[in-house]
Image 1 (cartoon, rainbow, N blue to C red):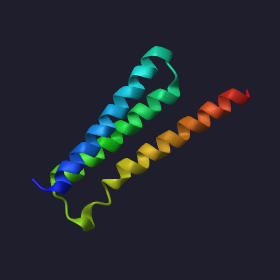
Image 2: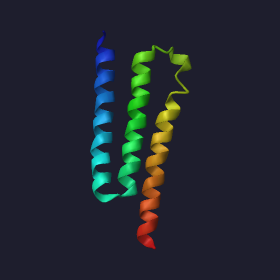
Image 3: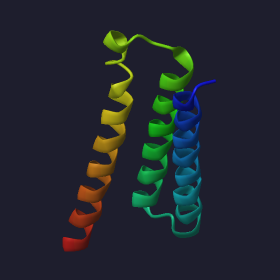
Length: 88
């Protein structure tokens, strides 16, 4: 195991812990924003885990980054919906 593998696992664990953190707040408040953050961090952790375990060549990693794009778009959409609901 290399240092890269170890640090990739640590980052994936951090994403999973963040997802559980936001999921706990969502259970308390039923606020859609917290659920979106939980799902987004879960997607980021999944992508990081795939990158760490699959040994995919650099040229073929583009499709895995779509998970990150989906996570960030989900966060942006949730923030937009939250701000839109506050105005009305």
